[in-house]
Image (cartoon, rainbow, N blue to C red; front, side, top):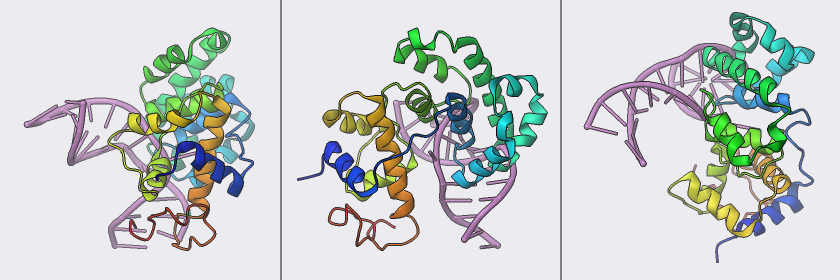
Length: 209
DNA sequence: AGCCAGGGTCTAA
DNA sequence: TTAGACCATGGC
């Protein structure tokens, strides 16, 4: 009998909870969601720390594209990311008063229309910046499911799996995603020691690299 | 010394 | 619609 999403969530909560939110500041979520694209979180943290209190919509929209590129260079793909952050910042400044009146789907479509914002970044922003329900499927999530023997053909199928036993709720979606990151960082990363792992019975880690 | 990291875009078939 | 090249830096 395979695990359900609800059972997975409950085990993660017991093992690692309570989870932390990405950031209380919505703009920090937008900014870091772009920086972290195919990039180690370590680099994002260093870059964010160096930017400090200048990481505001008004400052970022004020400076030149080249200056922004230099500020985020350590995160890689800096030309593309700087353009994306500029566009995202302009959108946020224009829209921030009306976002709460918009449907989740409407916000998602506008985010996806920004070049450099794909499915994952849009979902991260929806959940952690705007508290809208949406499942975030990233590399950690795919690895995690795969190690539990849960294989899918697409991210839509992965989302459907989560949604089948969990109601639409932004807090649950955000906490769940963060718990999977915590789990991946603590357990399933460089070492195969999984004795205390809440999924030791189901996990395929040793078989799957 | 490679390989990988919390992706996304563009192109070819 | 899907696979593969490409973008770029830092850490191990």
